[in-house]
Image (cartoon, rainbow, N blue to C red; front, side, top):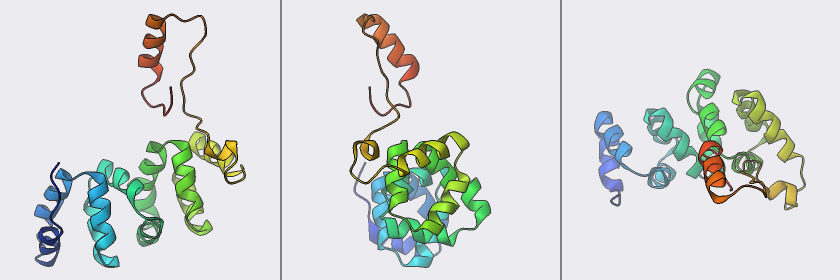
Length: 170
């Protein structure tokens, strides 16, 4: 992907060419979009974030600075929170990454985010949040694939292909 042109994107915002802005943002990688959002004032930041496709918004959110994440969470209503972005973000992140993100947010924001998570994810996140900072429990992942000693290479690869798609560590 090519380097993005912040001036071009800002011009789209100023001229209210939102279709062009959305199209251009859809071509960019998540980290560049997050960097661009970080450069914007608060109101355009939320507006641009809202115009991102749901899947892309979830990926971009993970790259945002905690203060930007908090601002976006506080700027969208509960219906949007549960429907659009945060549920997808929390469910898509590896649990330990979601915990790291939540630990940096204020308690009121964390409560709002946790309401959107599914019961299994919420339970895992709560389990991780109980560990002291920098302990083995706080930095481990719960999303891994374990292989059995008796498996041969063919069986191991078959097991990984079948069960390892959404796992962080094999």
